[in-house]
Amino acid sequence: MQKKILKFVLLLGIGYVLLTLINWQQNEIREIAGSTYEVPILNIIFLKTLVILFGVLIEWRRVLKLFKEGFSVDISLLVLSCILIIISIIPQNLWFEWVSIATYGPAKILQGALSNYLINVAAGIVLMRSLVKD
Image (cartoon, rainbow, N blue to C red; front, top):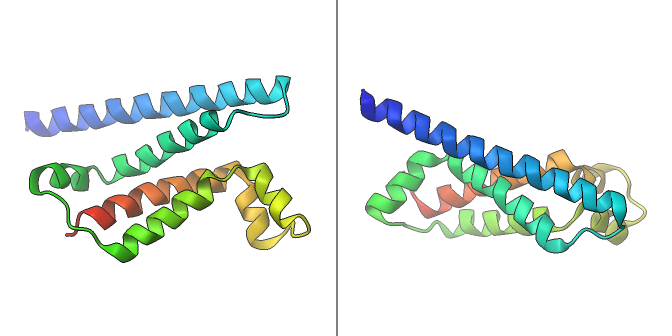
């Protein structure tokens, strides 16, 4: 019983730290974007990495299993997670520059910050599922 409570508290703590870092990084990016046009790409990559880690945290049981039993790679899911990570790492303003005319459909969806965060969370979940099979 105490082990379960300890796991729960530890997971909540890690989740809280991740969400705090995500919020802090978002505010820093907004501050930089308010003063200059270009936000350093490292800030964006750091933010998106934190969101991917949040997706990994959702699959915490697989993380424990990964450390206990090792990993067994599912190539198709690994490729999917890599594609999701690549899609989500590209900053939203670049989607508009690359697609330029299309401000609707898939291009419009990828321009939103929330959809990018959801893609990052999904990438973290799929990444863990690709490394540890049930």
